[in-house]
Amino acid sequence: MAAAQTPAPVSTGVKRLVVLVSGSGTNLQALLDAIEETGTGEYGAEIVAVGADRDGIEGLARAERAGLPTFVVRVKDHATREEWDAALAAAVADHRPDLVVSAGFMKIVGKEFLARFGGRFVNTHPALLPSFPGAHGVRDALAYGAKVTGCTVHFVDDGVDTGPIIAQGVVEIRDEDDEGALHERIKEVERRLLVDVVGRIARNGYRIEGRKVVIP
Image (cartoon, rainbow, N blue to C red; front, side, top):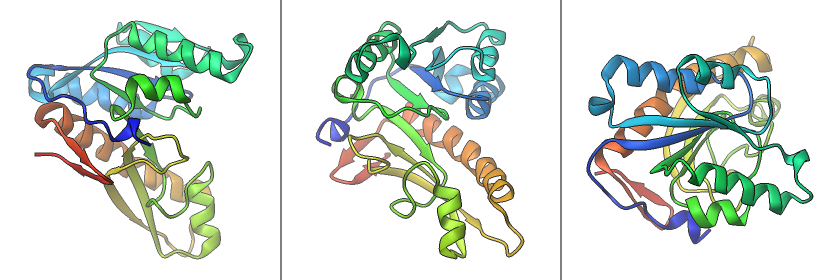
């Protein structure tokens, strides 16, 4: 947890982003569209590489269509999870990122990755943390009978969805909702929130004070 509370240095200029994906890459596309629409200077960041934990996914195809370098670090290619974590950290570090963004990256990183990128690794979660952490946040909120849920953008620490919260967006749960319908509405809010948060922390810098993230 200490690693994730180390603030990134505030520096001038466009920030370098490495984005990690595991699936369709819709959050990656939202970032690509925002940067293209506003320009890297106005947005404050540029994506310099996209990484994944598996081959043949649409997220990598989106990156390739955008002309971005890509890399894949598969768990099954390494003898231990620790070796995979170190390899992922090294692959990301090769691109010298100011921030690393998990855009639907479905793997939990370990000590080596957090030692390098703690306090600079941004993740999204489809619930209002600390409620409903883990892999089934949407399903769990429905099963609990919650009336509202949403999404959280947070920094990653060594727990499961326990890092300092940067921003949250609220989504009402409707009586007719099933998991798929609710998740789609959450994703719409999540994409907008991620684009806004990454741009603001890239342009303005930030600091982490205990569990509070302060963006000047």
